[in-house]
Length: 317
Length: 296
Image 1 (cartoon, chains in turn red, purple):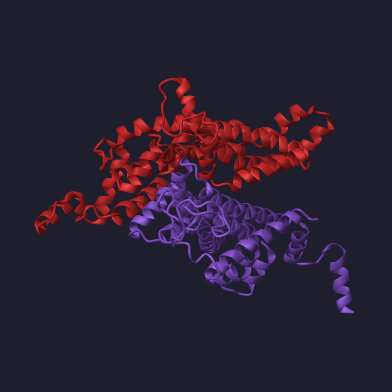
Image 2: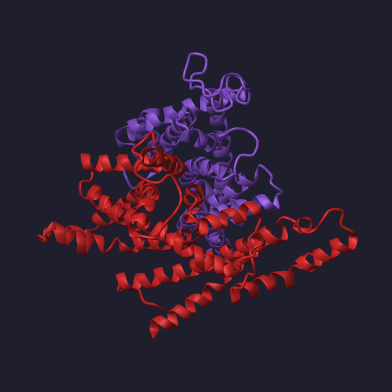
């Protein structure tokens, strides 16, 4: 009950954020966006035809009603039909979001779990060669562009100049084996880059926690290292770690895989967004922006509830 | 006598020296940091050479055969239509510096001003509004923001720079805000209030200069982020419009790679990796040197 009340309050507090995001996106994409009048007209239109199309598109109405109409679309989550495929936007989203999740999930989990593990190792052997080796590797991961990692893994694993083990591009989830074949190369590229940033961040958090007084005391009392690491260090470092993980979720669901999907030709939400950007498909863009903002508010709420689960001192007031 | 005194005091353990003197001394002892700085310097020389027309000017000329191998004439070979990859790679270094410097300076300046104002007025509506703006910009997917700004500017080549500045200042502003909240309760600020200085003067003359160590590190981070984003945006067709960049080279190379020709891809990737790696190391060393908590 307390959690429910808290969640409700938090969601209401998130309304200004959603309003802000929709306002900015409306201004940039629709109000100052591309003029669609002449895309819909034939050759040599008359002045009446132009005026008619403009009023159809709502260009002749003032700013406020048009923005309110967009807000109404956000609330009912009905953005109409895509301008390029004429498919309902909500249908497109419900078809493509699962694809994106299936694509991003393995990399997301591996990148974070391995990141925490390497960070623990590096922190435990702080200053020794293992630490230097892991952090050197992380620095390399941080300095390589995601695009270069994608192309590099593609050359190595799926081209005839490399090992030629996996398909070059495309997507197929008909059987688990096919799924594995198609998801491996994108996942490797994702994990490689994510490990660079994650390991560094998590190591800094864990090292900070390791130097605290209560850890020294526990060590002096003879707590075995495994228990010390789990109970005194890892648990206390969970707050920043959880924050980082949860806040990366909205981008993964919406746009995080944009590059991956457009490069490998995977029909997920990232690809849809990219195509919408290129063709100026406003209903799709409006839906994507609004969805990200809402997910952000939900992510904020989730982190706060996670804090409560990890740290009993945090109260949900 | 007085000179002896100061040197005696500051000579022992750096006691009494300014943060900057200590940091410079510490940085000079950091071998990785010094090498990284040297690396960045070399890239800067390459970029300046292009600006002054010493090399890289022929990046758009079709001079050789298609896919010429590495030779004395074409150091990195030629691309699919016979342009010299070496010249293109050098010219792209200039583009990288142009993007990196513009975005780093713009984002850091914006972040400094808004962060300082928000921190100084923390708890008031001014702070609330700035925090709200930061939250809003943070929640718009970056690539969409670039595209949207490009739309509304009618496809201007500066859309990429503006979009990066519009998002990269937030990280800096958050850090500066936190620091200013700490600084504004210190005695010297109270003293400034007491002698009747205006708020603007207190913020920008007395508080902001004391966050300069944060700004410097954040500028290096923005620089790296800008170069990396440029590559991805250019590949997606949202980045560099006229000119040449590592991102465009890589984008061009995706066709060549499938045909088994790697020169374009390797030239752009390695050069970019070198600069980003050097800048990352430099940024790390700078951060260590400026961190007042690690007294060594």
